[in-house]
Amino acid sequence: MIRQTNTNLASSDVDAGYEVDLPIDGSDDASLQRARPIPRISIQAFCENNNMANVVQTASEDRRLSKAHVSVHMGGATAAVQHYQESPTPNLIVVESSLPRQQLLGELDRLAECCDPGTKVIVTGHVNDVILYRELLKRGVSEYLVAPITAPQLMESLSNLYNDPESDPVGHVYSFIGAKGGVGSSTICHNAAWTLSKALQSNVIIADLDLAFGTTGLDFNQDPVQGIAEALATPERLDEVLLDRLLTKCSEHLSIFAAPVVLDRDYEITPDGCDMVIDVARQNVPYVVVDLPHGWSPWTKRVLLQSDEVVITAAPDLANLRNAKNIVELLKQSRANDSPPQLIINMANMPKRPEIALKEFEDALGIKALAVIDFDPETFGQAANNGQMIEELNDRAKAAPVFRDLAMTLAHRKEVKVEKKSALAPLLEKLKLKR
Image (cartoon, helix red, strand yellow):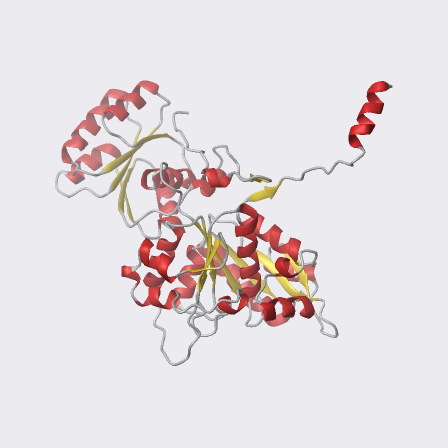
C-alpha cells in the first residue's frame, strides 16, 4: 500500500522505566491515537461512490474536525474541475477517482489551473500504483490514499497535513468531572496530574475551571494572584508569554491555571473562549488536565466532548449512577470514534452506608471501573490540610498506586517492571557455573 503513516514519537514519549502502549500498525485504533485536532479550515470532498462519501461524513462529525467546515460532493475529479472553474478553492480538496493513470493526471492538471495558492489536495485512488504516486507528488498533491480507507485513516492523514511533524506535537487534554458534587473529582484530578508529571517527567498544566469554588490552589498550597479567569476574560490575547505569566509553578514539571475563588465578580465563560485558552495551553505542554466543576453549561459540554480522554468520578449510590449514566450516554453518542470514559469509584465501603455493588454499577453504565478507592478520610483529609498529594504524604497509601495506574492509562503508557534481584544473585550464579 502506498500510503505512509508517520509513527515517530517525540523524545519526551520515551521515558526511562516506561514504554508507550500504543499500536504502531495501520489499524483504526492506531490512526485515532495519532490523529490530532484540525484547525479552522474548509474542506471539500468530491467522491465517486457512497462509501467514500460516508467516510468523509463520518470523519466530519468527529471532535477532531469540529472546527473545520466540511462539505461532500459527488462526481469525483471531473466534478471538482467543473466546480472550481466558477468558485474559489478551499483550504483542502479531497478527490476520489477510479480513472486510469493518464486520465487522472490530466484531470488533476486541469484542477491545478483552478486552484488558489495554498490549497492542498488529497487524492484517493483505487490502484496501488507507484508511478502514479510519484507523478502525483511532482504535481504537488499532498497525499495519495489507496481505497478503501476508513474515517480514522482519513483523519490521521488530515492531521499529518496540518500538524507539523518537525514541531512539538499538540498536547493531550484530559477532563475530569464528578457525577455528583462532592465525590472527590478534583482530588482525583490533581493527584493524577501530579503523578503524571512526576512519573513521566513531562510538563503538565492543570486548568481549574471551577472559578468560584476551585480547590487547585489549596491542594497545592499556592495562593496565586492571577490565573485562568484573566485568560478567559480576553482569550484572544492569550499567547505563550501571557500564559507563562498567568501560570503558577508547583514543581519542575507541574503548573496550575488556578481559579480566582472570589464571589464578588461575575464569570462570563463562553465555549469559544474555553477552546482558545485550552488550545494555547496544549500547544505549550504535552498534557493539559482540566478540572471541571459539577454543573452543566454550553462551555462545560464543549470542553468535555472535545477532550482526548474523560474521567468520571462517582460514589456508589443511586444519584451518582443516574448522573454517570447520562454522561456516559452523551459521550457515546457524540464521540463514536473515541474510547469510553474512565470510571473511578471513589469513597467506597463507607461504614454504615448502603452502596450499589460494583458489578451492578458497571453493568448499568456498560463500562468497567478503572479503580475503586476506599473511603479513607484520615489520609485524604491530612493531605488536603497539608496541601500535599497522597503519594507525597504517604507513598504506601492504598490510593497511591491507583493514581499511578490512572496517569499511565491516560497517557497510554505502561510501567516496565524491573525484576528485583537478590543480593545473593551473583554468588548463586557462580555456584551454578561451578556445577
